Image: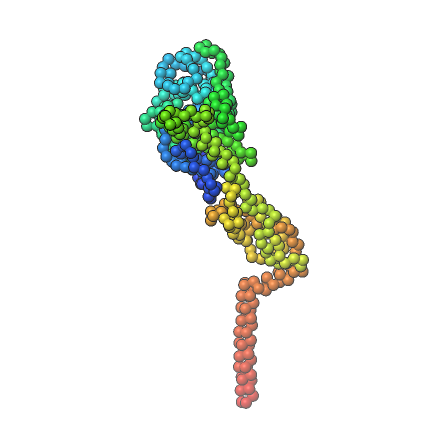
Length: 450
């Protein structure tokens, strides 16, 4: 099985089997400007928050995540491959570009960087033609890859994400896409870079492209630079509004995917004369406002709780064949933790049930010996299972062992059955013997009387 197939299976299973948390944290925020949002924790494969996650919306710049994934996987063993921009490759390009020119020779890595960092629509079309030979074939590859990832509510119609009829995606699908991108170290490496140096080519002078993700670079906007964010993608289109996808890591080391779609800036305020009041916050961007709010909320509202520790007694069990102790204490073999909202009342939501291999144990018992297991539930849903082990050694008494062997022998059903048969045979023998002797005496007496 190839590495690519393994990654696809892992990500698909992880996201299709993952369930929302046992209860969202209290005071979960509603987005102020966006129509669809989702927060997902990567380490624990848990949805922390969702707001209309399955509503279809134009994919906008999130499309470039898929384009970049296909390009990184295509060139993974040869990022230095030189691409020559074809005569017709740029005819469909509109919107933001990285400035590529027909006939330009440039390495695949630089084109991919221009796509991810510079958000260049021309980079998306160059990669599509270089990889698949045509835009149509590449889009078919994009949609096939989306199916492999379990993105059931996504359809691409071009490689750049510019508004076009028939294209759509959802926040839930973009989370799946983002989790897949997170498994590609090259994607994160490029996405997290504030800029990329584009060396001079046969058609262009050397220049720098600065990251258009405001969480990663403050070149275009100084308000949202956030050290905890490792990228991933941000963009705007008329149909989609602001679409921001961020992968952030909290101080506690937890990694979250935050997806915000359909961000719309509020209507401008008017003065008494009907004139538009200039917004004092010239760096305000609605999609980033919601994404930043959700990131901060996730960082501050989730953590690990210890459900079971290895030092807390679960129960004690009677012990036989020891003249020193009559019970042994059972402890969990390992610690069990769970990722939960920090306002979770553990005492009220966690229940535990244990089963033992035997209601009574026989010495000798070794410290750490597994003698049962305990299931732990949160809100009735199974959270994990741990073995129960003996806390200490228990030595055996040889005298009690002998007595136990004797007692076991004499109480053995087979022995009891044999013994009962023996007694029965003895009784039968005695009865027949008695009758025989009685008849014999009668015969002797009869002979004497004659």
